[in-house]
Length: 123
Image 1: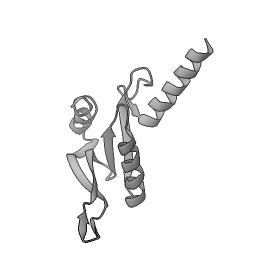
Image 2 (image 1 turned 90 degrees about the vertical axis):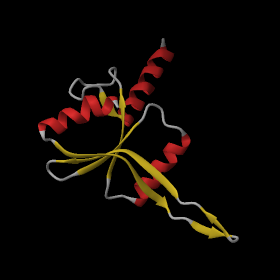
Image 3 (image 1 turned 180 degrees about the horizontal axis):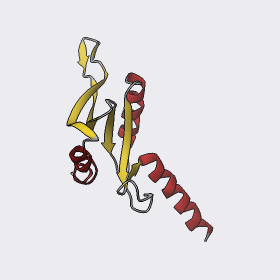
Image 4 (image 1 turned 90 degrees about the horizontal axis):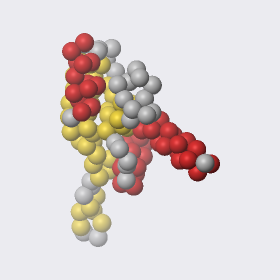
């Protein structure tokens, strides 16, 4: 909700974002049969699918600290949908450059955490 309120909504008002959808499912692996039993499909549900005024689409997933299943599903998503711009985003004032309203890519937050831990261990 916070990402929508603070990041998406202002960009929709300005016209930068022209469409916002929530909870859009993507099939990562089809269901199949094994030994006469059906194995269910593996699906991922995107937090937000945003269409920008220039036509490009970004799939956003808001993360704090992803678990192993999230990491695996991200790999499957990248493999199954290589043409889709898929990003994990987190809220982190400490890792923010001030231009992004505190919302930064997960990879940047992860790197920042690693650097802070390393600096703390040096002390």
